[in-house]
Image (cartoon, rainbow, N blue to C red; front, side, top):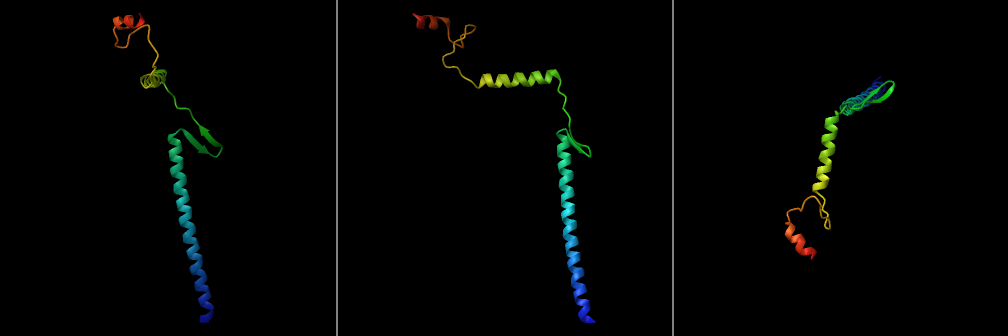
Length: 103
C-alpha cells in the first residue's frame, strides 16, 4: 500500500509545480500586456475587440507654426554660407571695406 501512495504524491507535486509555473507565466504576461496597453494609449493608440484604433492628436495652428519656425531658426543658426553676401545687411562688416575690396 505504501508503494502505491509514493507515485501519487510525486504526481501531485509535479502537477503543483507545473501549475505554479503556469500561474507565474500567466501573471507576468498579463502585467506586460496591461503595461504595454497603457503606454500605447498614451500615444493615442488603443486596442479593442474590433482591432486597433489610432487617433490623431490635435494641434492648434499656432503650435504647429511655432514648432516649424523653431526648426527653421535652428537650421539657419547652424548653417554657414562661406561665399554668401547679403544684399540686405553686411553681417558686421562696414560698407567701406567692401568698397575697398571691390576696387
